[in-house]
Image (tube, each protein chain N blue to C red):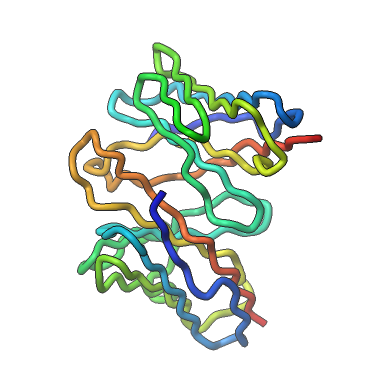
Length: 113
Length: 120
């Protein structure tokens, strides 16, 4: 699976948009980009995923560059409860090597009042 | 999203005893389940992948005789830490993925709330 690079930490003001970047320059054509977050002492929570088109759901938006070498997770109106470690993971489809989710170090997002 | 239940959430045991952790998918069938371990201030580390009805596949460096995994049904996987020692104290997290349907299907991996194991 391709590796990802994320900034170790970011701050965001409450109510503002949080834009979390992720580099995955070695991503393969069939690998998806997944985002999870982990609030302290809890299991990871699925946020969103995409292949090449931008995606939006009730939690966030995912913007993937045209060359697919990087992506940005956008939390449109961050709240204090969005404080967590955010993981960007690229994963092959389940047919390839079982499609394991391998976690990197993630970005620790602190939303401040 | 789908629900993965993990039990117990916290366990304290004496050195040398065995501890069993259960992971259940509550509203979907999970042909594949995963077990992770997380030490303080570190990321999740994949320990093993288990497929229903077959032996688990362990990641390099993980002792299969120490961490016994059983995936007997489509909704239940168990991790048994045998002869636990203080260095096995960690946060153990299970994860389950729903049945693969098509390449374009979501196949999202859902996580349990984790089990904090403290070995005295």
